[in-house]
Image (cartoon, helix red, strand yellow):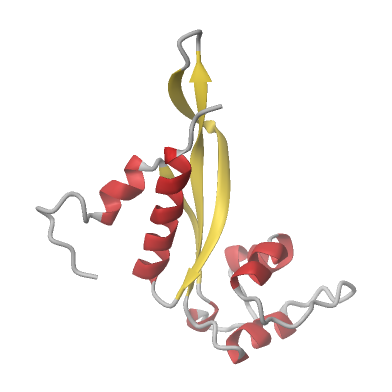
Length: 140
């Protein structure tokens, strides 16, 4: 994606910051030097965030709960064509402060979400769209 730096509305970096987003992890199974020697973020996506992975890749085969190996999962991901980029993005939690309900945010409280797209730029834009929608919601 080529961005005109003078067009501030289109600049994803500014939109990313304005939605108070933080990039947590980037994973690409197709770019692993050895898909059976996974990076920590890739391993954690499979082991700790299985529900998010299945939501992003709905046609993955069910995982055998008794099998600790990630090899079959990685092969399934690659064989089913998920060659793109998985991003985990965090967003600071907004809170109402004081009697006048001033809005503030804190990285002490935040939420995370995974995104998948064929390219890094497309995944970032998905994250920005989600972040902007979340940021526009009323503060509780």
